[in-house]
Image 1 (cartoon, helix red, strand yellow):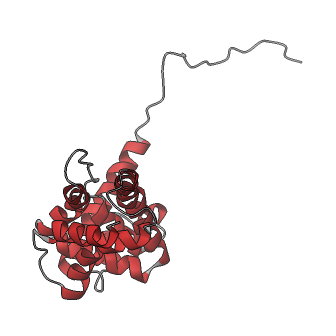
Image 2 (cartoon, helix red, strand yellow):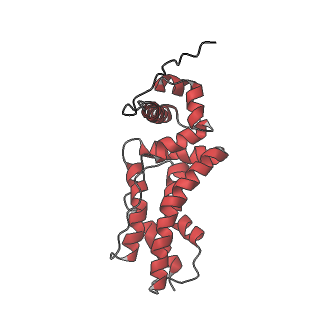
Image 3 (tube, one colour):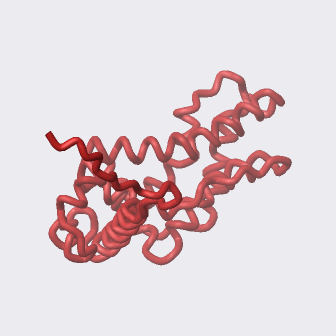
Length: 206
């Protein structure tokens, strides 16, 4: 029996494997979102084509569905990923604080193809449960949460009634924007955020 000890090959510990995979995947993901925005602008949500999306993004459908559970969820993320988070405005009048919460959405809707993209996202969220979950998580974790914080402080200071309903308040503040985009399909006037905030304050007076 051969008892010769054979040398083993070791990899120097100073050499670390290259980690290019995640970078390439994220680049592909962003390319798909950009292609989805182009497809939504050209065709709208009702005419959205997964085949055209695949060609635009130069990505296979297998790659696309690895990232998203449905085409509608892609449409939603493509739009909302371009909307800034709300910024609080402590120290300002309450109606201004509330209107500032709506401003990122309003600015997005007034710029370029923003209204078209946001309208498509709302329709996709209504059509598909996965897309609806994506939209609600985004809205609740950013906008509803910020609204709740502002109203809680205002209630503590006695500026609004204590027994308000956060869901009703959210509908009053953001509802006119959704209505304008989806139902009226018209431009979003610059006065909408402040008017919506004033309507909410009128409903919440103690």
